[in-house]
Length: 413
Image (cartoon, rainbow, N blue to C red; front, top):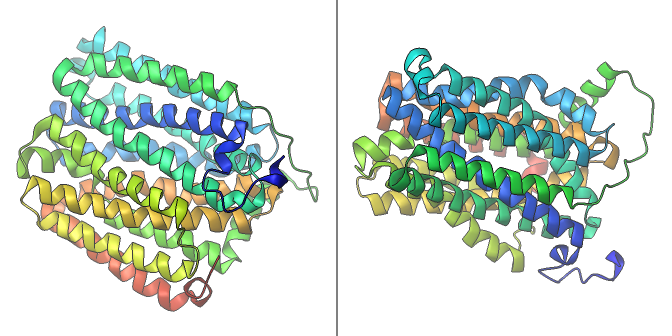
């Protein structure tokens, strides 16, 4: 049936039942995670009014993620990936229940212990994410034929971005109008639905192992593969440093409160703005992908992302800030889809878990470590100078990668 699919059909990958269930499940779980992110951020800010405390949210998730990622990639190449996804999703669901319970029934613990219980739960979700990320990426590549990798990456990105739009907006609005307890309860419900949808995806056979390896050889093979592949290494390095320096998500609560004066409701829209731009660009890429001159397009888009962050930091109008955040999401979406397609096309089946784990270390952890960097920089340099500095560093990274990675610069997919 897969061989009969029209490769030029923009909806080709969605016509595969397992892939549909997969993207539905990913949408619901991502929606819950994005809601939880904005809820936790605003709750921590209300408790502390401190930029560094906001940065510690990202660090609390990044440390366990980094610590477990390579082993999780090894596991994803040995154990059925659906089982891993279900267990990790279940941990997210349980953590959502704990956050709801702490806030609704044990609020006194936050008075006595401060933000420590919240950071502890986020640490556990970091462990779950460490296993979920490589297993999800590896399973996605098994659900569609090779010729549809680009199309599937585009739909995967679009679904994720739609959740990233609605998640922060819904989280901020529910928090603002109905309170933190109701917001956390909605997260619990959405997490449960995500687990149920993942259960509907059929198990996929594990790829045959081409050679016997010890666990240490297996763990290092993913790193070696990426290191010796200039195209993959330069693509994920570019995104890693761009996100690490250029992201400003963790300090958005301060922008919403002190610069733009919009409160929790405005924070939801600020968090959603990049994803709105990404959805718009995803719709464009479904029909007109940017795979011709992919390397050049990747460099241009990451450079543009840095410029958008600088202009956002200089904005004093709420609507102008939304515009630059939305524009940053548009250019970032192009780079995400190109990078995802590169990894899927250049990675053998039996190594997808480990290579996805390495990619997760480069990209995924840079979000959390970038949040910590943003919090520290804002503390040391001031809010606006820190974001301008981050955007400028992104421009420098693009310039360096363009010179050091000629294969990426000349790449067409």
